[in-house]
Length: 333
Ligand SMILES: [Zn+2]
Image (tube, rainbow, N blue to C red):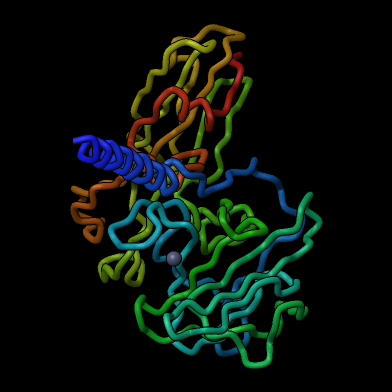
């Protein structure tokens, strides 16, 4: 009898341990892990070049097929941690800044050839740019210095992913992704970089209380009706979440945008705040899975993206604590 009780107690301990372990497992791979860094937009003195040049060696700006921070229908990070550019197999890839190779995966058996280059571009900290799904040029190695005029890799052939260049700005240990558009504010073909991130150019005018931000997605798969196969598609709407003077969180939708996909609205009017009130806020953009145009999105379950970008896979609403971790603030005029 005693032995039996002992066994039962041990069994219970084991069960409790199992439950704790499984909770820890879920927590450690949390959807609310940090995946992005959103920096204030800075006027960069040194703009990046294209990672691709045409056959005459002239700077060429390939179509973006999936933006950084984009909810998508494919497997892989969701929202997308990086930007996909449509470039053919075997084409040469160039660094977008001069710099030093700090990481390389030369093993292309899984189409995961990967190069990270550190560049000092007169910014407050060095920038790290990653090039993924590539076959590194033979002989290149970590610590080599590379130049924008000399190729570092070719686009790898199809294996597990459609052939393309995945490019992005990462932190030093390549666990977090930054916004990318502000490195290309001079590139009209990429809408001044807006083609590369779902959200770009947030701006609050503290004289007029007008807030504006640009938001749209690119298709994940080929859609021959638009832009040579890859479209720019409007969001279903954006949502402004706010808390006035640390009060409860509220929100409103905005679906109207101009032809550049820029949403503009008067924060004072729409929140009912008074002069000198402090508003904490964040914004989501919802991808339209009912759209007749953006047919590649189908019925994907996960449809939202955040500004500021932060979490690896957030749901469409945040708890107060999750909201306050990412919220920005402005003072109403
Ligand atoms: Zn990608």
